Image (cartoon, rainbow, N blue to C red; front, side, top):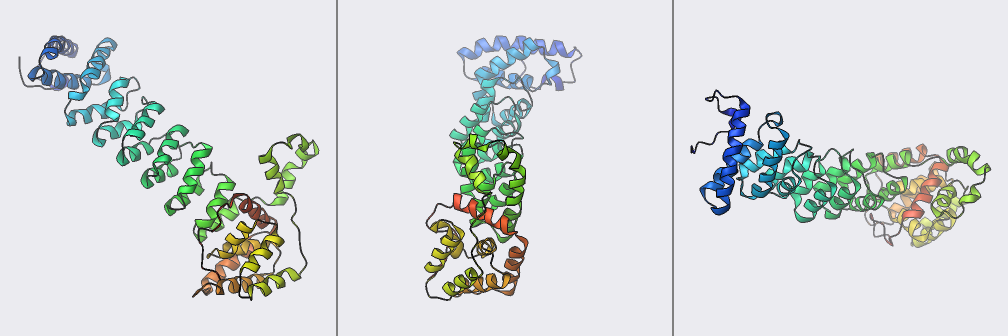
Length: 392
């Protein structure tokens, strides 16, 4: 028996038809299988290489019966195939919808040079197969899986649970990735420590307004403006959109807390007289910002924790939003923002910052700003804001 092991389809010295080559090799393998069961030496190495060569043949060169035979033997011997051949085999099987499941799973758990094509594109791997790989392997396998064209919520849940920055960033950018409500909540929480996640998450069509406004506290100034503009509907628009439904009897949904919370966004908030701005300025001129926090909570009808986030947030955008919601004039807002900033040691507002905050203040409608406050009040939980400063 020759020890020169060329793939059957590349041997140009034979004159027989391709089918005869394949059948002769298959017959030869059958005899070798019996020998390999008794001897683990050269016979096993020979059959493994020959079997891999045949498995790598184009699909149309094997009959279904021959393909099934090869798949069965591959399942038994895949652990004995050399790395380079396993990599070639995985690349070929990655595009086969009928690839043998056991072989696929074994190769998907292999070293990353073997597993990558399967993890990135094999549609024959089930969600449970992918979750198993994520649970049992590491960074490289997670990143490869995250690049799949389509990802189910169960797979993204498993990837988010790894907290791996590269894998999580990849699924955030993946338009074909689906998220469960819990998974989306978790990846938003991870964005606090991984700023690169913020922009792709906010660009997703499945990002909810509530989660977007949660991210407000740790995003850049540019993204904060984007959140306020894209994820906030003017209360007047909400009222117009739901007028017919309300007339038909929204009381039927009084037992639905989520719906009632949404409807509460349409309720006009209390408006105070022109002295409100003067009161806030007087408080900000004092030595203790806690009085400002208390006043904001009362005037804006928000929780103390929300008011504290707004006052101690170093960016200033939150202060612009609440000032607009409360009806402060532009001049009152700028004075208010400068006074609050002066309570932070060594903090002053540059001309560029003042212009940026003024532009935000001018661009946000009062009703829209008030809706933002409702979102914040519903999502703020922590005692201290992320961008906390040492306010006196």
